[in-house]
Length: 261
Image (cartoon, rainbow, N blue to C red; front, top):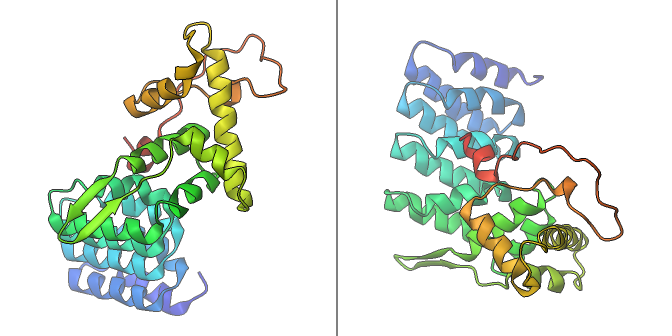
């Protein structure tokens, strides 16, 4: 940490006086230096609601994506003010890994949080651009991208003149369309998802003789949270089947990774 101002305020974040800690969090938000993120994330566990609120707001001001997981966790805070600031901060950072958390935020008992979650989702993209951003994000596995797309497609929110609804094609059709578009990263992601779907369909063929329903069954399985098949064990075009593959433990879903459950 090379910024003396940040170092000073990080030290103050550990002061015995909650007013001092709150003031330090606010100051770090104004400084806006990403080196303050670890200290502010730690402050999200502070016993004082106002300190957590200020730290959450500050993380949004800093705007660094490394804070996303901590802010997602803050959406579960017992204090409504902290949850509101966490929702706003996630939208301000704009990292699409927060999409599942914002969708969950639409169900919050606090109407203000629902409204913020709806607004921040809209800022991340419209029904055309956001699905393509999801396909392009290589941090997610093919199965996770399918899960997120399915969740987004089911969003129906209309409260106090705020409407959020994402209407876009079923995942296989979407991917086939994207393959003909100019976005290189989205095209790569679409191919990854199609390879996953095609490989899984091939493996399940013996137990599901009707190939016309393979995609539908896969999406139902994704929505139902059934055990995930590791993508690296699936057959892909031009590859030979792996021999004597030992059963692997199920990979955590994106919701488990984000919420720690």
